[in-house]
Length: 543
Image (cartoon, rainbow, N blue to C red; front, side):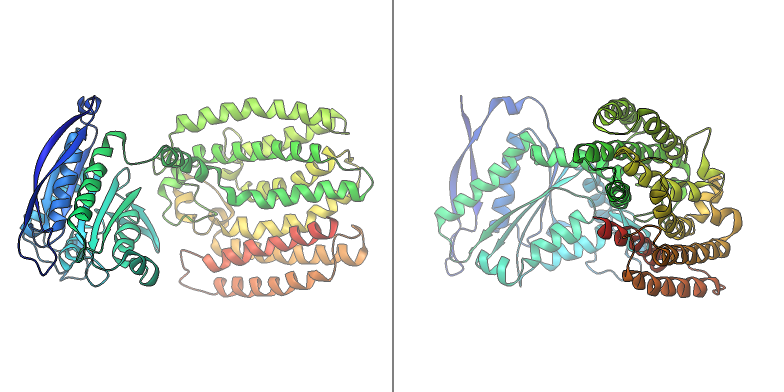
């Protein structure tokens, strides 16, 4: 059964040439089940300087809809607040707060859902709203800078609704001037501070709109409030939001090079006459993927102390931050690990049934890989805490993975092809994994993680990177001229030669610096792209 309430809403329905305010009745449907309990806390912010505006009527309608949905609603009209619109000192968070600004911050923290209702003037928001944002959404309240250009969002687990009015036709506003007034609020402000999702309702063509059109907008505003009974996020958005932390924890940036190295081994098996099976190939990679995934999760758990202290983290160092930011719990990761540990032997059995190789060599190889990979951080082995982490990563991501591809396809350990193919790749990995310990230096030192950088110092770590770069270059050139791995290398090696010269020059420059930078982004990029040559050149040649 449908029930209705009637609201007397006074709004500026006339065009700018008319004088009278029109008062009209609107029937709003209410669903009785929505009246059982409060679902969320809602803060409605009217940012039009005048209360008797059409924005005011939209605010009234939204509040009535939200109230009907049994939300707890607080209304703020910015024109009633007393505060300086201008940031008058260098650091906005240090400016003396008026009591209304303090109260506004309290209400924003309190709210689950933020509603901003304002007109678009000159393509953007009124000065009143801009001043409010400048004074309230300050560092330390809405966000803070962890490291340069890396920001922590402080308004997470909140959603928002923008209801905006404008005279400009909507297609012009969106297509020609790119919707600056709503993009600034949605992307550069709310989403930047962690508020998501942010819905937008545009009321376009206010100046020449009819009474019927305005009534329609009023009803839409009411309906937007009423929908709070079901929550603002769609099921897809909820699923995506719960999946994102797991996506971060997986750290997909590490997997492509592992796949390429594994494929090198499989192609090498075919090249040397052992045959090739796509079923075996993908079952083998699934096994390696599960081992790598478990390794990443184990690292998150055992490196927590170091990651917590680390303020210089990046895409390839400092962990995924899912535990540090409390996006996932240790219990959740441990539960996932149990499932992976169950899946690994099942996949291994399927792989052994499809592979032409004897089960004992495969079992020995996989067991060795698992011990080395899990033991990188897991106790009691904890290789990365004993200055063997860099060596372990180099071996697992070159020799071990290439051998997996080779042996799974029926190859034999005695064949020199995969071993020789692994040598340049091994040496090319060492610079990047060694240099990644430099930005992590302080955190690792406190946590007792004895990386090469911590044990021997940053300059020695850079020198090791230089030496391993030279060895990668020399071994690949030797294999090319000796033709010990026929077809794997060609004149494309001229590119890593040039790359090595550039990388070594930058490393020497870094060693010569008295005051060394904490972050070494350029060096990391050079080192990571350097290793790609030693995977991709033989990959395409053996493909």
